[in-house]
Length: 394
Image (cartoon, rainbow, N blue to C red; front, top):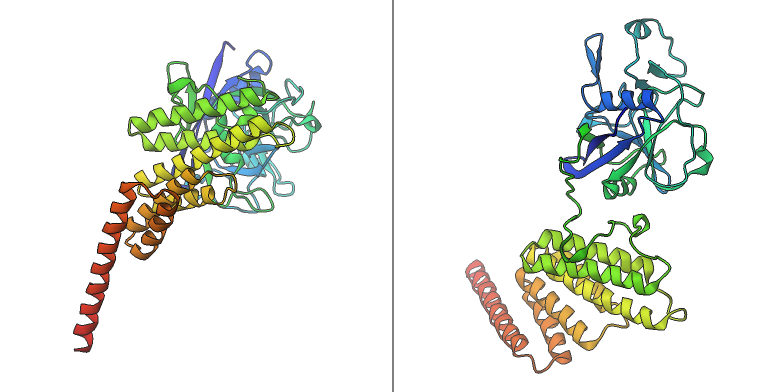
């Protein structure tokens, strides 16, 4: 099999998350790759029933281990997929025969058809490896598969490794972080909205991140997955976080608030991951703290522009809770809070926030105008209330 790729478009409920692109190891696992590629595209039809990965759900998700899907017998309900005692016990490969469905006895509820032999039983030395799940015995592959989210040496030489994720690692991480029950079944359906053969001329859409490289952001969405800088160097980590933040600011200047928000939150992940303890590296501890303060303020501002006022309040509060924040940054956060409360017609709270802002920044005429406007609105609201009460009791 020549170089080949498949894509998996993932939804969580009604929300599209993005595309995972998998490179298939056709030279090492030809039969497994043929099976997977066919189930991603046309699938197969047996007894007037079509089997394929489209609308199949992820039924087992274990953080820092793997995400598993592919039960196309019991787990292809799409958005309406729900937990059952059967899900996870089924599978069907392209090698299944009609008579299997008529003659196979169910053992402990297991209904897997067209089992085929293991291939490329290798080592799970890194995340984002794609392999076949089996029924705990040799040569019991059908359609269930999993994607690792970290190295898993305990799986070495037990599963057929047939590919690796080359794009959409953030989508895998999003699935990995879904809320699940004690069995790893997601609280909200996580499923393959679409899938098929992929080539390099095709897009790689993502909906909960921004892959815009503006400003030089070449970094992975999650720090653990990035190979572009020395993670042992606080200087290089700070440089990466700053580039990502600046990328967000460029998008903000183009009024692309949604993507700017993705970038700022991405930068914040890098800050939280790499900020050194003060007794280890005082200089870069301070630099990271200052960057975190800027990010809190920027995220608060973006949420305000998106009219998500409660989220804006949350991030401005994060800034105010930072003991290291400067008086000017605290004034900015209070100003943001005043604007949010004003937008929600909570004029008393807005006035309190603006007044606290003025204490920290007494010479700002913009704040003076905000206070005057808020006092006027507050008085108008009180007058309206008085008239309503007078009419009611009059």
